[in-house]
Image (cartoon, rainbow, N blue to C red):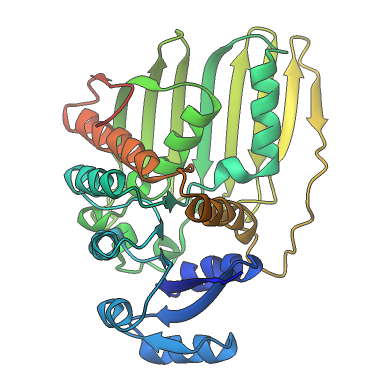
Length: 351
């Protein structure tokens, strides 16, 4: 079988996770790398026995033929690359957010659906074994129906630690905690449960914080079942790394906890009954090599499904519609904050 020819644009996360994930798939061959730093692209290509390297993505896409392009660049650049690929009917693996403006994302989704080009977005948390096990427990109704959902995500990003003037801290370029990490939360909440129907948001940063992207978010949510939810998130908390997701049910709790530096393999799954007896649920899962970036494990699962969808010419998830939905929730969260945390009613589907 002829292997799919892959090009990777962006060599930070692209090099750490995208490249190893494609190398794991026997149906793929990465033939080109692209970075704005040509020397970095050259070194990475040589190290990984990749024939071509570029520092301009348009040159790469014009000079070579690809079956799939993988993108890991700032969203303001990503939207241009996605459109360029779709015009050439090239499937895309993209990061979130797809773009900095929902109007642009709607145009991208419309074009992708019209051309029926398989595309995916890297919403990786539902690929983690503990998340899958938690979803099974929730759907089994063992602890009854969900009444409340609480998410606490606190850490200090690298750009905030070093006080770097990066797109990740610039709100217009797709930065700040609401743009960077909360799309992941919105996606997995609706994956676990049901669509959010109403939202209220308050965003803030420390007084002396010099960048435009907000570092803290407090988000209240309502669901059609009557359940309520709350997200408390910060990307500038010194000395704290925690990601805790708790589902309060009629007969107890289902909780996912990560209190380490590893966003994938540190998760533990617990149940708590009415008598407040806490029980850890141990899961038989694939051993993740911690000598490498553990995010390769969930990323490779999404990429494998995308490769399969290209061969079978079928849709897969998470796709560009997933990216559109997440950005719709983000933009309405910003809208709520703008109007002093007013509750904003949400559509179940976005067109």
